[in-house]
Image (cartoon, rainbow, N blue to C red):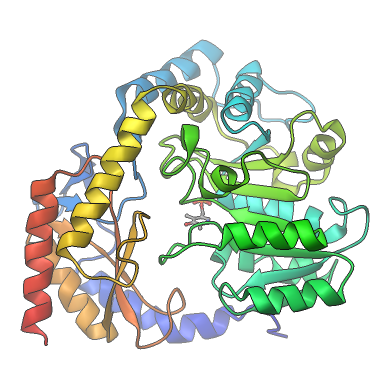
Length: 403
Ligand SMILES: *Cc1c(COP(=O)(O)O)cnc(C)c1O
């Protein structure tokens, strides 16, 4: 037992942090959307700016996407087909996947979430179906997202599973030398900051045939031509030894998740995923509102508006870094972890910031090691310099007060 997961222990250690977070008014906030990351908390009537929103490009409130979502429901006349997609699907599903496929030049399947994309694809990878019918040694980066880690026990029933230290290329290369088939499971951009060494991983792929599985929930939309993400931007084009999962509910501003299965028109692989991909085969998929939103967002991603939004995001990231010190300062990614240390002080900081009109997410174990708590900040294209300046002044004052 507990070779890969220990939910009981996680509850024992971190449930009380959640209680404290909730008591401090930093969780279960019910709000009204005032757009551009501004909310009005219904309990207090006070408005606040969300400094921890995943909507990196501000597309969550883009009028074209909202209109397309509403129109798609009314035009289709239903939210879903309520039957497995391999049996009956609406044409809007094909059109949405086609739009994504053209964007990233890969074969794309959509899923209800990024977590569902991982649940659909990791067992297929572990089975050997994507590696010439030889089950690969499945090597997970220690910091891979929870939705990947939680698939370890299932993968371990099909293949050998190992976990290595964060970004440990030497350990990975040693494993590549000793095994005929290795698959590496990692995030492109990590949720608590930093990124995978994509260039070096591609060299290992060239040298040893390493299969690469990336979670691009944060890299997609924010980076690369047409927002294709950190990994595809580095690769140029996807190959048949790489699989990428992503969320469509973060930078992309729509709903659901997606799998970039490999090069386009690989019918064999596509059929395997739709027939044996767990959640893909059941009754739920992205509903017609979400599919309409995807088609509209894909059009924005292909237009001149996208580099403009990416540039505005980069400009805000630079401005943030000028004013606020953090471990990831200068890396050009939109995620900043503000290390505070004790869980108690982290709550004090977040509570005070909320009183000053800024919501920030307190992060503690198991997302981060015990005693290394802090605030996760996400920078967005639709933040004003003035907001960032006021936020920095508040945060830096709190830091000075607690020194
Ligand atoms: C948010 C997130 C997910 C989960 O995405 P959903 O679409 O909400 O399932 C997966 N991986 C990473 C790295 C994330 O940050």
